[in-house]
Amino acid sequence: MRKLAALAKYLQQVTGLLRERFTAFADQGTLIPTGRDLGNGIEVGIFKYDAVIQIEGYPGDAYHLLAVVSAWLADNDATRDDDGLADPDVDIGLNDDRTADVDLSVEFEERIQIVPQDGGPIAFDGRDWAVVDVPVDFAESVDGMDGEAGE
Image (tube, rainbow, N blue to C red; front, side):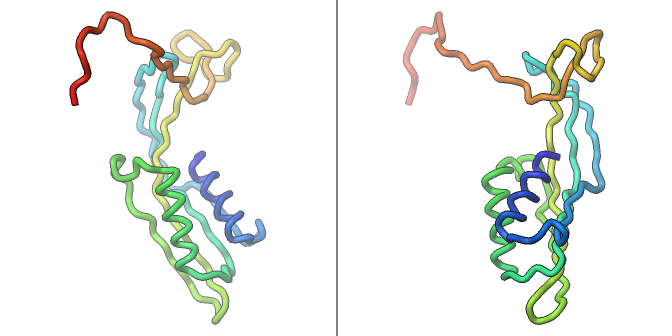
């Protein structure tokens, strides 16, 4: 639930709201086992969930808050359309002419990856593993290729 934590932290910073007026949690999660070999580790599953963020007594402009959420999603969750994730749901309840309670629900999808680690907390396939993003090896050069790149 890294995306939920990052979005919640960012919204708190941007709005300046006290922690007591701000709640964030995951709801309606689905674990999709994958078992995909990534070379230096394994993607064991995909966690799809609704991130729920509740703000009590929000004193700011609603369009500003929605723009902040939209911009954060564009910068930090660029594969949303490819992943088929739903658009965020927003429920605003006016308290008075200055404040509103805001419930924001954002569907997220996060890959769960593990790498071998001596003494790691996860036993799988006769080895010890830990939940860590699998490092990616990049080629520094390519040998044995003839020809030119086309335009």
